[in-house]
Length: 233
Image 1 (cartoon, rainbow, N blue to C red):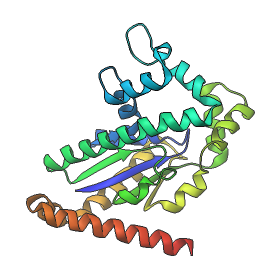
Image 2 (image 1 turned 30 degrees about the vertical axis):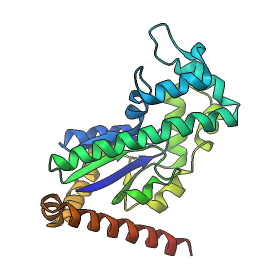
Image 3 (image 1 turned 30 degrees about the horizontal axis):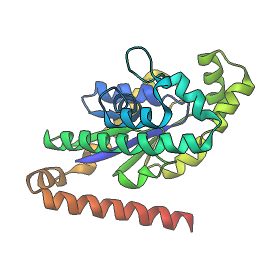
């Protein structure tokens, strides 16, 4: 099974692409959804967060008050790192488990939708990287219209992320979401077709003989890492 990392920048249309990929019958594992699930009451991450931050960050139903927690860690680097050290490993375990389920079902492709795929280094652990792109100017225009914010506020949010032009350097495929929905769908169809073509016979072998699948996956990851290192030289 080929695991494809899907990422992009704020207001580039990654969520739209994710939904269109799902509509084509391809499983998409959404890191943002998992991040909300792993901190629900009864989950280990929930207990660790409450233990560190105290019960004051809970709502009346026992769920975490995300707005209050966000405010608490916003200007406190130590607390933010602690929160990330609890949530990120839990999300990665959940992603791995969902990928395994897709493999057991015999899926040929599986997308993992991760906004910070490049920033946190997870691009090294997927077979292919797809980046959803639009120009920085269009990105700013869309963000101000979507959030009804001023230019300075929107630029602050964009600047907090790795520039989309930098993310493109990590891509195996770039989907340019600067045009119409029809043009976007055409690009997705082309990328999906190429991804399926790239799986070929390795899908069946890796599913029937798991050790071979593991070796093929490790080879792909090693090739990706070497390619990125050579690009930086």
